[in-house]
Amino acid sequence: MAILSKFLGQRIKDLRKRNKLTQAQLAEIIGMETTNLCKLENGGQLPKEENIEKIAKALNVNIKDLFDFGYMKSSQTLKEELIEIIENSSRIDLELYYKLIMATKEC
Image (cartoon, rainbow, N blue to C red; front, side, top):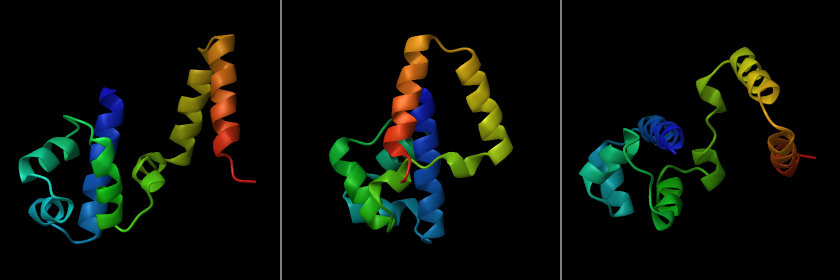
């Protein structure tokens, strides 16, 4: 969970800056204390479910875009990391990864 909260926090921070918002401004828009937003951006905690939609709306993105972490690494790095994960996975894990990829793959 720590990796997810770190990546999500960085993504929120990047999108906030892209929208030229301060932490205080975004916190006010979504009805959150600035200190709590700071914790989110630093990866100290995950947003509550009800806040994810508010954050996405305030940052002018779809909810799924909050979880798009691929931009943080090069394509080559992503491929290498995926290959390593696959090579070290059990049959059950491989089946799960396959299903996840196929479920999210655009037709």
